[in-house]
Amino acid sequence: MPGGTDQTLRPFLWRAANLYSDTEIVSRNHDGMQRYTYSEYEQRTSQLANALDEHGIEEGDRVGTFCWNHSRHFETYFGVPSIGAQLHTINPLLPDAHIQYIVDNADDQLIFVDHSLAPKLASAVADADDEFEGVDFVVMGSEESEHLEATPYESFIEGQETEYDWPDIDEEQPAGMCYTSGTTGNPKGVEYTQQMLWSHTMATLTPQGIPMADDDVVMPVVPMFHVNAWGMPFTATAGGSKHVYPGPSPEPEDIANLIENEGVTISAGVPTVWLGLMEYCSEHDVDLSTLETVIVGGSAAPKSMIEWFDDQGVEVLHAWGMTEMSPIGSVSHLKSDLRDADYETQLEKRGKQGLMVPGLEFKVIDENGEEIAWDGEEFGELWIRGPWVTKEYFKRPEANEADFEDGWLKTGDVVTVDEDGYIQIVDREKDVIKSGGEWISSVELENAVMAHDDVSEAAVVGVPHERWQERPVAFVVPGEGVERETLVSEITEMLKDDYPKWWLPDEIEFIEEVPKTATGKFSKKDIREEYADQSLVEGQVPEDAAPDQD
Ligand code: AMP
Image 1 (cartoon, rainbow, N blue to C red):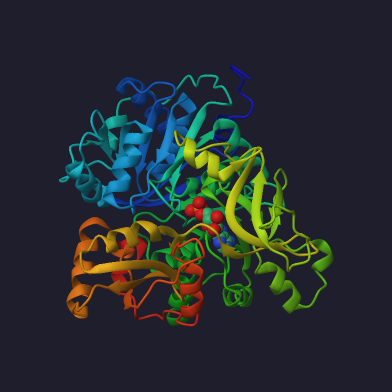
Image 2: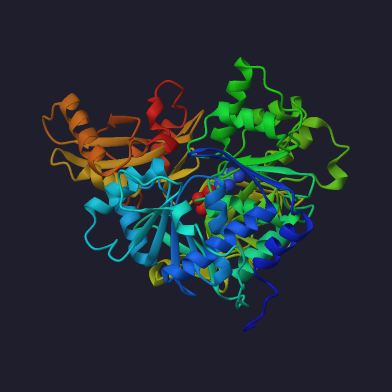
């Protein structure tokens, strides 16, 4: 619908700024706490839009962010898409080579970067060939960066008009972009059109989604570089909620303080975040009384976590989604006829990935190409389609062929569906490891290990881990007469050159042969089964292996 202003993001901000002009946006920023109202937010967002114009950013241009969750980052969320440009949130935890690839692939014109992340970006820039050619940088704050030639954000917007004549934008115009890691090859880009973000927001606002209203205080802990913090900044704005942003590398103590001091009612994050908070609460007196709902997603929510929050009077909503779907797919609300069921039955349902939110359709296809029965036992791959599910990857025809069929996205998640329609993930077809909510490519790691002359074969698998959900372990077949200790330290040194610490395998085990499938491929399934009981426990992983600390 050319020129349409209906299914775009802008009306969400218009509503918040006009109906809830005094509602606050609070943020733990690099340079201290920042606190202002929707009204000021709109003014600063207008200043940003004017500054982007002056910088020469035009409709369709891509603007990157390399930032944690804070109010300036939130200003780009409406400021960039509402002038018709595209917000590309870059994951700063990726290896440098991936960052170089995605900046080049997306053709970013300008990148907003946090002070604390500037050294990481500067290292990717220093090693780059020409991937950053023509890219300008703005550093989030008032000060210049020691690491990167960048304009301070406050100088970038200073003196700009606090009003902006927002254009009508075609709802098919890409508004956002995020990359996701697949089994092989470089990360794949997913573009979010204005319409996708609009429909995702509207579905999330329904009672079967993750509703947010004007009496809510919403704190996304899930990073804003991760599928728009699961869309929460948009949903909270549409609902007129107060926003709370936890800032750079938030620790459990920061999260606890913000909940207490700001009266947070809804928060969201991966299980690792909540395990950290639970541990912190066991040692400190934390008042969680305002907290009503915690969204757990990205990896499976352990039942013990749901029970712990129940004991605190906080409802856990277990949610499943993907970068490819903006990202919300299912939420584990209890159906009304289960409200009288016993606690165990309820817990079982709530521990599943849940019920599809209104607007999506799914089917589950088994290995014979047939749809499975909804009996909680048969399983197959989950296929999905709907208004906020992408139809293709950005400039990646080979990935499109593998992952889409007849308008359906093939998720790579293996699920059962029970009689009530609750989906449960039982396995993953994609050969990737999710540690603390972030992907590690096992295939890339094993190729890197196999590049060592004294390694004849290597397979990397994800092993269950209490805190990070999964951690990589490398199974290596050494060459003849190789000294094992030397080999382990050489492999580790080699990997350290190219990968962030949190990608490094927690263990390197020696085996005689990598089990193979009938077609001669590595059988990760066999390795995983053999080592399934070897769950890694806290203490085996160095503290600094955390995805958020590298
Ligand atoms: P991402 O694109 O990084 O958001 O990752 C999406 C993938 O994470 C899904 O395809 C699942 O494999 C996994 N995932 C997301 N949410 C959950 C959940 N609640 N339980 C288990 N796995 C999940």
